[in-house]
Amino acid sequence: MLKLRLTPYTDLTEWHWDGTRYVTGDRHSHVTPYAHPLVENLSVTDGVRTLIVVRERVTGRDQCEPLVRHLSPGEYDRVRTLTESWPTDYVLTETIPDQPARVTAGACRTTPLYLAHDDRSLHGSWDMADLREHARGLNPKEAARLLLYRPRYGSETLFRGILRLTERATARFGGHLNLRYPEPACTAVRAN
Image (cartoon, rainbow, N blue to C red):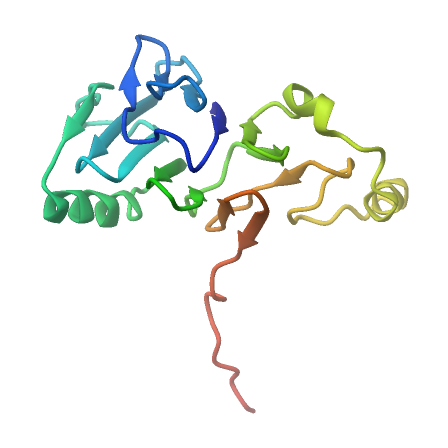
């Protein structure tokens, strides 16, 4: 659904839409949505924080304009909260100067998002082949699972250095990549 490169601790407040992607003024970061009639993108900023959303369209709703909208801090918080209740697949990217970049996947994860990083930037793509330069060989555990026909759904992939962002998970990158998984949907255990 998208490709991205996020370089935190640079001039992240100057995001703009160039007709095909969101890009920072210093060109160190970009988010490129997949061009498809069933995918839409939008972006808002309060002058400090910037939120970029790439999501599946929903029937009966007008398509969003991709231009970056300027909002008050309260309006920004409201949009961020509403984004998390979107009924179809989405990826939310949030940048704040001098803080790690965040990428969050929605609950309806129908498209993959693979992540890799170097010393400066987080790279992401729906196509794992785009991240091939970050692959550091085969992941033996995942290779064994595939050979035994027992693949496991999780953040690990067949290649060391490339991870998968699963539904409702958040990736934070500020030089190191940290994946945070959501709380379990049901934490109560029923005793019989």
